[in-house]
Image (tube, rainbow, N blue to C red; front, side):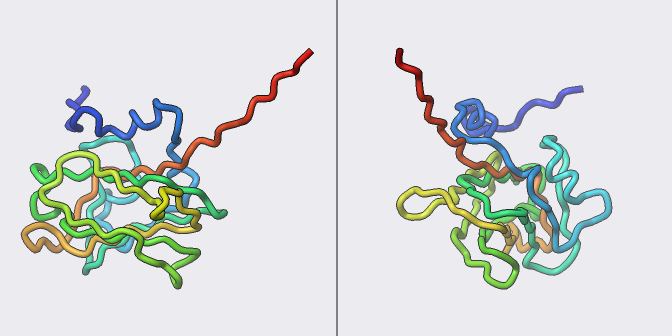
Length: 172
């Protein structure tokens, strides 16, 4: 059985991939969570199903840690949230941090979400639109709608720019 895609047209990150300018690299990372209810963890967060979700089970901030084995170029982070389905479990304030490890993370974005429904695209670029190079990304849920305690996140995708290869043609 297929479920209707709740994502508004133009917001689906798979459209980003189809342009050939970025590719999803979440599978190259080691993912960990500050907490989760049994059966609502990393597997659900990464399963490409908008009906499943991670559910935290502890005190805030709720953390998603994404660690790469080597320094990695990241351009965009996409988070799927659905206020209509999740209500008080929906994040309202998120901090995105990058660094080499847990001890030197620096916040590069803070988002205020107002009843989000669909994909939230978070640029991981500097002031000159240059992608970030990092070993680690941490997404911290600082607050939920209606002062909810635990949080739901339905999907997270991470994109790197596709390197343009210079094609040298033989001239005879």
